[in-house]
Length: 237
Image (tube, rainbow, N blue to C red; front, side, top):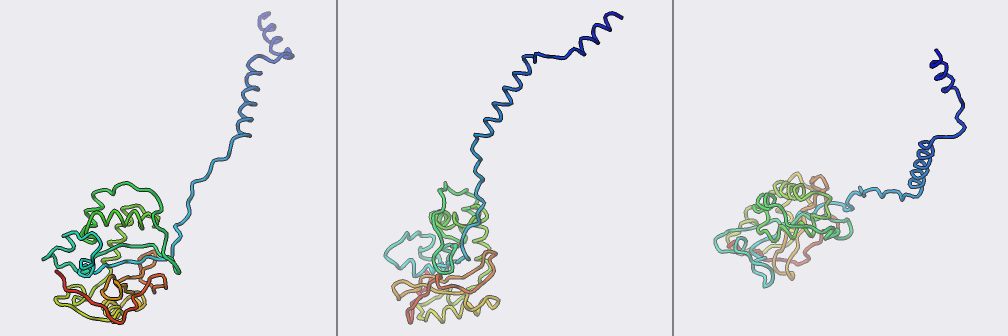
């Protein structure tokens, strides 16, 4: 009984001197609060949407490219007996009134799986890597997504055989070439197609304007245009 009374009295005695653990807890809380008060707020990761208006699918006409004095003339594109017509040059993020940004971030070599899946569309590994570095990095897509979009865009376009595989030298106006490609793709607006040319003499490219979902749309002034009255299309090799 005495022990019980003694314990009870001990618990009810007011504590006039805080224990050491109390001081330690107060000191720790103060340090933590001070650290929080002086800590710099963390920067939020940027989630900005890539700033471009639409895609330009660029189809290069191989026979005329291979006839130019400059450029890498890989035999897979320019070799005799290959019969290569149009190839995909790239899928370029484009602005309404100007070219899109280029070289938006540093990159390493592309995965071999991406390259192998894209070679039937883009003729060389070098060009595939160049297109990713220069244009793909500005799309906001991963390499796998970007080249899947490139392949899907190309698969959505039909090219007239007489343009894609000419057996003899042709002479045509840029407007007529655009009209022929438009006729082969009746679901596209006629204004979705443009041409470019080498020195107003030979056909360089057919360009197709697509929105960010890869649906056809009208081209803007930034898509360019060949202003020659007539251009040459050389036969496939």
